[in-house]
Image (spheres, rainbow, N blue to C red):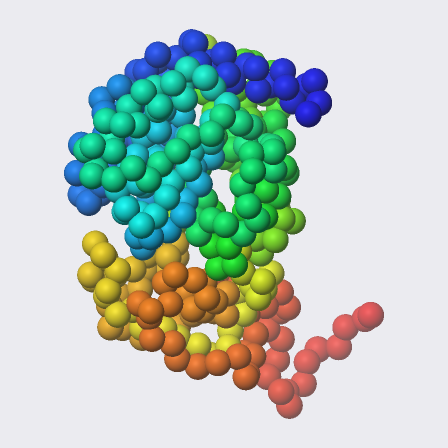
Length: 355
């Protein structure tokens, strides 16, 4: 690891290990509002030790559905709030592993591991000290995780390429990276990135959202799906004075490890019907921000969405209509359009133009 990258990690370790003592010390609204939590999650959080909850610094909700029996990896697990929530969802037959580089955070997570095992009735978690940029050094096997999550951590990494590369390696075929992070509406200037407090607050290292999309595609995640997002308020005047016109957002994405995804959403005349069988989703299933599928209703989908449902753990909860025999061009319901002017209908004369 370069000396510059190590210096960045040292800043992050100091901020989260020594400067922050609870989520109340943060200077932005990046952390979740507990009042906005879905009803099914609140009982899970009530089973988590108060000290773990008090030192939570996430920016979203990283508990996707259908996790029972899954093997899950949490990158930048901190004191373990998400690990202990996920542990209840995967159950006794699943496993959750948390990776973090900060001794102070890991100590809190480990101190309460037995307490949570007694609370849940099973012990299915473990924590590993390490860097999320160096997951290849932690003895984690290729293609060994059903789901990988991360909560407001990727922005803190000085080597996001390495993180995405390792996630691709560790996911099983059909697995997904489901994570929340902070993004900017433009590329963050060096002067903002260099401020240690702004970096620690998850703003300095935030990617321009379009750079993230291209990064994900470069590492084999052909069709990143935005699940939800919200603007962040910078409540500290000193930070606001430095960030200026920059706008930041907390956003949750899901990236599927699927070989057959295309660069664009293509139309093959396909559709799905949601059976209403996913726990806590009896009336509709939300794949992402633009795909809410009501129970029992025929829902047209592009080829990529078809694969995201058919070749993953969601398959048994849907009926599938159609195949890939006929291509109808771009699937316009996903926002794509033909780049050419409509012109004239076949057989009609068009005004002449020069070459």
